[in-house]
Length: 325
Image 1: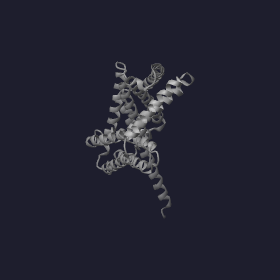
Image 2: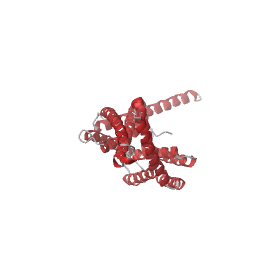
Image 3: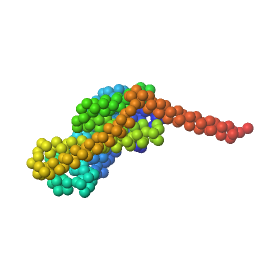
Image 4: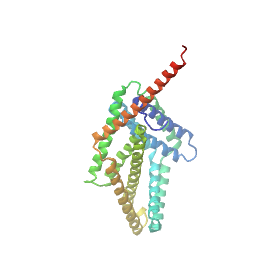
């Protein structure tokens, strides 16, 4: 099944199911990976992010599990991040070249790409035995599976539902606060924090999308697009900081100036687009957003109950017709 919660079922059990499915898939990704494990590691890191997004919906109902598992998933993802983070910078440089096409500073970009390739290879060399690292991660994920088995069975349906809605509201509130904060301090770190909130918001919309897919899926796609743009913006901020910190390692002064000028232009475009979309995504006040999501869950549950009732009535009618006289 997908990374989605079905509102007609017990939400607490649904949360446990999704967590176990993500953990199981992550173990399978690593167990089945062969040769270059980069893609499998990238997929596992995304699953760990989704698990952290899920955790934010149970923070109130199970704070102990939230604290322990959030640290576990964060640290596990971090242990796999060095090479992937270097690869992301190279991909962002390629995206910069694609964005500007013939206007791109081809020579300077080639020089910078060579420098980024060297740093990526250094990260590969420094990470040590990848097989040992992957084995440790698999062991950690299997321990997490044991923690999650049976989760939800002991949680009241009403309290789990309320906690979920509170988790949705809290992340939404923090996204709005971050958006307001950018009006005062529009630095790279503030945009990075907003990106994390928007990404979690996209995850939450995906989880709740079965309640009304025609409305929530389009909003989820917009949020994912914004998160991707802000993720790329962060890569450019890191790239720019690295160039400034060690200019001699990144070609000549003229080359650096040519590339950073393109970075600045593209970052401005990405940020303007993201802020415009966020103004719509987070237009409601947090309490209003919570009420709206609750109404979608109520309507979805009622629809299922009505369907079940109609099925029972049809079965009763058929049984009556077939009964011997």
